[in-house]
Length: 166
Image (cartoon, rainbow, N blue to C red; front, top):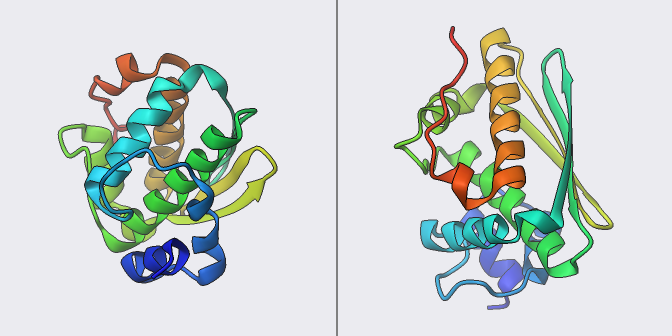
């Protein structure tokens, strides 16, 4: 089975066109795509290369719009891979980083989050929104945390992040 179809089987909810993008990502893990171990390895690779990533975030009333890119084609492919994997995790309730209160809150409210993405030549554009005002603020806080990951790399990822107050 080739990788795009394998990712579709693992993701279960992705379309073939959405799955085609991650297969272009360089192999950074011995784990199978779609597993926590694989997603962790991609995340760690992105953190280790955070200085080659740039990110723009625009808050909107119901959430955020972001563009995350890199001039390094392999890092750009990993950014896309990561976004697709996180969309699947949110849609399937496949939690991670449960020691971090921000991630607990995001997954507790996953059913109220709507995420769309579009590939750019050097990365990905994401729109993440919610009709719930608290969840919209949570999405915005999560986006700020991700921007801190891009700015500070592994150092930032070791920290716990508080979600906004209700």
